[in-house]
Length: 364
View 1 (cartoon, rainbow, N blue to C red):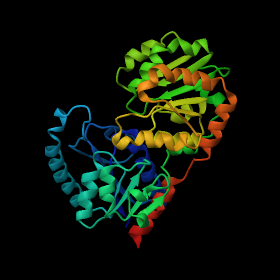
View 2: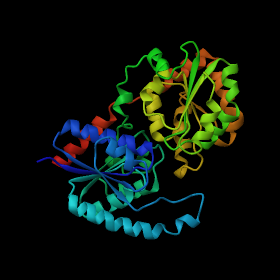
View 3: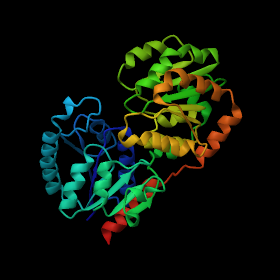
View 4: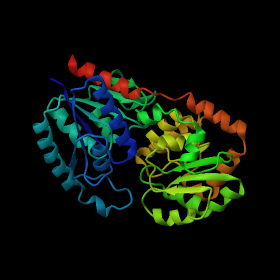
């Protein structure tokens, strides 16, 4: 009889897509394995996980709101409710192991599982670990991390450096630039900029592009612009009637977008960084300044220090972002150097390594 595993967490694509990649790798390793996801109600995982073919249970939980203290008043109540929900889910499903991938739902699920003596595993995608994972790491069986130097957060003997799992559609992509350019209805003769603010969008990136949208045509550049859902219609109107601009709130075919891009503008969440290493694209990162523990700035600087990316501060995006992209587009040697250095950091099989290690440890 196959093992039963819960994968807990979500909130953003940076947690959800690696979790799905791990689930797929577990299925490939052991076909009769039973996998259940646990996420937060109202978040992306409640849509994306079922689309990937897996069942999911939702918790009534939310994270700390760093912009509105009033919204945090219900947090203790929601945490208590979520623990009762977790108790019901775990006692009914009876998992052999629980994997935490970060996000609101991860903490109560792993905490309860550890109290029950169930094997727990953590995947920490960032180069600066979150407080919840640091706490959970003390009782976890194994902690999978994206980069070296994580001993300052977790017990050294529990760490395994695997990198971050990347969607197979991206890791295994064999799409030509010409094919991808035609997919978006753009010109092969123009340099193409891809702007992705993460699955939820990025205000500073969007505002910088909207304010200087004419600059792209002036420098013979074209733009594939993922805006996120917030104010998507306003930004879509900015692109109307412009042959060199393609605007959408969400790009499902990211393998096409990466293949088309000569330069990528992006937040520096762990998965965005990982995917850009695998895609091997010159990147201009605009770290989200309110990210927990400043992890996005840390993620970006890890590459900047290796001359593998460029960083523009969020507060300076409006004045510097488009200017930096134009300069990069006009400097072939600079782009080639960034491309070589970022591609050298790519790891393509993290999902397989994680799946095999988990199955080995829970079978012993």
